[in-house]
Image 1 (cartoon, rainbow, N blue to C red):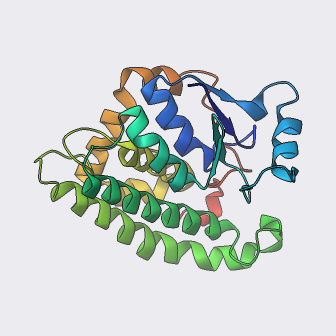
Image 2 (image 1 turned 90 degrees about the vertical axis):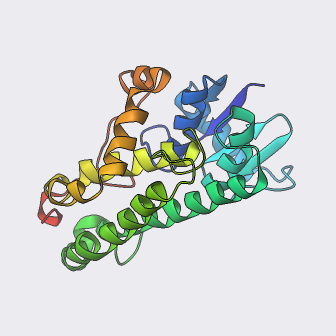
Length: 238
């Protein structure tokens, strides 16, 4: 099956979690909005009254007749089809639970530079962001990373993956979170990262996976930028 991924063409954003799964599995997919007339196609589908179960916003995935939205929901669908989650129900639910927690983490990270309203520019809420950033760095990053470090430590299989005996889509998404944190808060993460050696190892293993290594070095991997979910504002990185 050829999958169609619909997401904004100039940022990694929440669509990157899905891209990483598709790339790692070597899946046949099209990143629709990055093609000629792709944005128009995406907006037509979003606004079409013929879609019985319409998505609220990108990312969404078209798989045959299915249109699936919300990143954790997409990955829950793709996981077993791409071999990125164990077969048993408990493991699948656990992977989905972890992905939902990662989604919360990503939202909190975004809200550091948009603490008042998504519709306002950063410059319009900079004083609030300067207050939000220290709390996120001191409390929330450590809270989330501590949770995932413990998850890796308690994996019954005895390895440092998050789910089961080999990597899953949750590991790929955790890799993305660590990449974003390293980009947006390099000074803070230099201090924080040594406390989470299992996550550091996970990040290295994921980056070294053959298909992902090719993807990360290619033009398909969009660069970090200040329109994305995580942004580098040096004044927030304390």
